[in-house]
Image 1: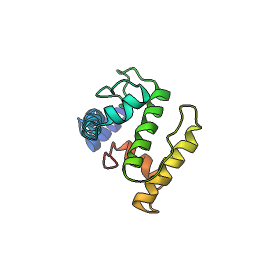
Image 2: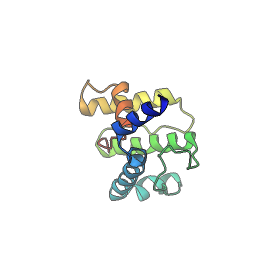
Image 3: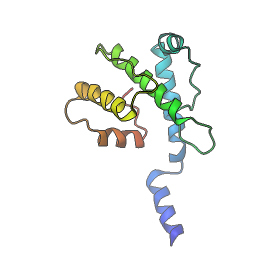
Length: 132
């Protein structure tokens, strides 16, 4: 029975669903490069370039969630500023929930009041790259 349940889940997402995050991350990285994030973000913060699968969650990849979160917030702040909205860059030791709330508040300003944390989490879980 458990076997049938697993098969049903696989059919819903397709056999390549486990690899979709890798493809989305590669596309994200290409878009960031087009926006010159290496010069505008990495040099400013003295950080190394992102690996092709930096934000992908996988048991096969080493990760540092704190470092990934900080990098995400720095990139999000930079993108918000590039869009013409003033946004104070988060610091590494800022309270994470407050940081996410500030980023979501700015996203709501772009897309309207329908943007909620629940919607953002669902988009993230589907690896939806429309926000970038």
